[in-house]
Image (cartoon, rainbow, N blue to C red; front, side, top):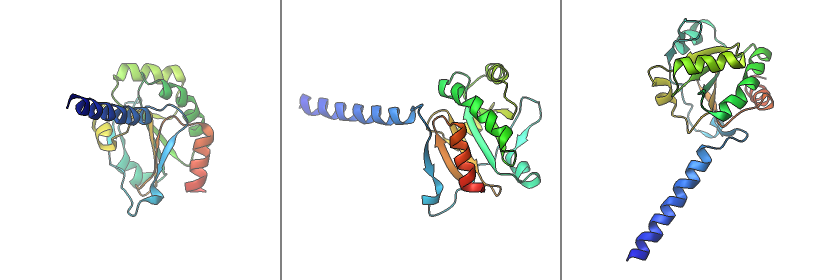
Length: 176
């Protein structure tokens, strides 16, 4: 009987490790393409304070600006986030027809602000002070990014760090 219990626990432990390893991967972005989904998923709406002390509202952005959105969830303590942020910043300067917003989740605002300043981020940086964005988007880990169409549909989820080439391919795929 003890052997059966031990084997069951060992199998459960291996499965848990496999899931954890998959979620914590810091290699090139693994994506979940929404084209395989039968029904489109609307991006959860959110409002976050930003580094410029002006709130960013996804609903207001969709109503007034209309550009598609690249949403990146990150934290200052996340090493893959630190590695990808310069690439995201460069892409934000190249692809001006896409609104870039990075939202710091599970992080203190002072730490997140210091990190964004250290990197020299020029795109909009927001702070998930209420943990609502993290809860609504439910990333598998950090970094996590979402390509959101101008009408608010999540086109793609990217779990893991992205490169400039990854972003160029995504924007070419969805926005020509």
